Length: 470
Image: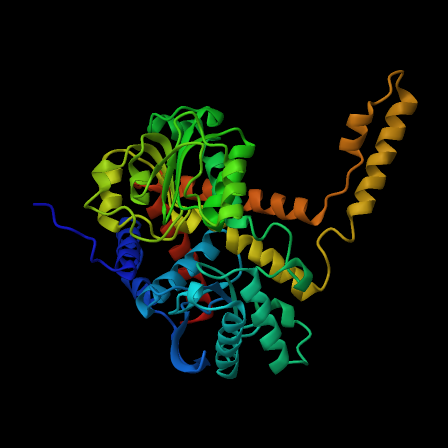
């Protein structure tokens, strides 16, 4: 009988991946001890009075690494939040930042609540009280620890955090940089909301640029011909689907917690997004077959499977049912350590979470820079670029018998907007990161991209710790 791994914790899976990378790359075991250790964990219990009843709210903020500051990581609201999970996620944030060369340490936080049980006013009260508790302990600041949206939180909660922090530190001119993923009106940056999903999309596009890698796994080199299944239709899954659709990719299955939609001819993603906005769920979407069990989406036959929900979706108990040629981890830790080994044996490549969903922290970095510098990206050079383009058009028209068409003029006479710069930076980040992962994997003849990605992160951390001191 095959031993089940469904009870193995998320943190234990992460530590197993760390051990594997250290073993295969012959990295010092001392570094293993360092990278596994979470530098600090704050547990907060605070009372609130809602509808005449007193409740005790449990919350955590874990700082995994301070080798670079500020530490960075999301803040999630879920009944499933616990310290073990928060510590593991904070470690992943450290590794992600290293892989995409963002100068942040790793952190994560959460409140053990079901946000659907509270009104907007009640959630604001809870969020601001949590912010005050963290700030008074010196944990929260633009230079020390910067949260972002995660499961159960959004731009709205980030705006509340900014407001609460500013009330405690009115002298801090960089107060807007205390969180990222804010509304545009409060210092946010265009493209941050879509960043993680678009990063998943860019990681896929970069993978398909390397024919030598595709041949190893017998994958069709034509990206636009791929058939995709996406498990999870929250912010990350939705924006991944939207970006893939823009490239003409056929998505045959999408799921969320209420169930899944399947259509072998391809789902109209724009219609599905509109349906969810109107109804709050994909349940009842007419363009496809509905199944109440969302986990079945993991086993649909497809070229690419994108788990974009929660951790430990694919474990040893169900890994044999996976029927895809390539897996891209849009969620954190969707594949257990033992299931990962089984997929490697089957020659199914995995673009790991610490790379594939790192687009969020990359664009969070751009937003943080924008807040610290107090200037919109592109403000200094956009019109200069337009004027230079106009000069080029004028020169060409003067020396040529043929005039440039108006359509081409509009292409040349164009200055990059902030969103253009953000998207360009995101694409560059994901492309360079994969090339580094691929090079390390091939250089050391590693079994998979995950081990290579962890290896890159651990080697960068090792260098930093040795140079700066433990």
